[in-house]
Amino acid sequence: MKVGVVTFPGSLDDVDARRAVRIGGNEAIALWHADADLKGVDAVVLPGGFSYGDYLRCGAISRFAPVMTEVVRAATDGLPVLGICNGFQILCESHLLPGALIRNDHRKFVCRDQRLRIENNRTAWTSSYAPGEEIVIALKNGEGGFVADPGTLARIEGEGQVVARYLEVNPNGSLNDIAGITNERGNVVGLMPHPEHAVEELTGSGTDGLGFFTSLAAAVLT
Image (cartoon, rainbow, N blue to C red; front, side, top):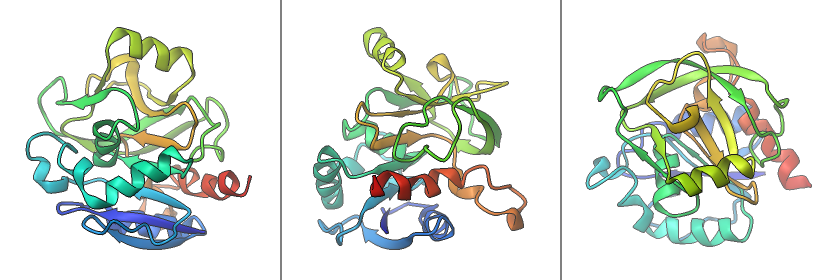
């Protein structure tokens, strides 16, 4: 399987994401923000970082990148898309996911190992996990607080669109301790923590994030 990883100006974790794709058993394809071409990939990852310097608002400029025109079109047709951290922000700005990410409630950048609970394992990116499975992966953000209006939040909760929830501590003030969500179809997932930093034991971060990349094969093949 070919998994495209988009590089925007200011992306930091695109190389890490491509490495995680390869460790997960797939072929990583580099995609450039200015090219309206997905190169025939089977899935797309929008990596973490500070796309376009986070000017205006995190992800607000990236949504207008030529590559995102194709990502939005393909995701609407069912292409699996994973947005990690800044990628999550871009997905919300592109209206592929509901809600928004705002500045952390304590107004400080946070970097820590974060415990999560997988709430929904029926998405293209989480089927390798058991329902309720707890994992620990790195979290690093300054604008990671997930918010939505009461009606949208109730719908997300009611339809089981929460993919992962923070445990032990809420690091950024996200409503309902939400760490990640999916769209109704389950092919688009946004996650604030970084699974690509926990894919092999050699780095000392464990392999709890690997499931986000091994899940993809089963989703596409079915």
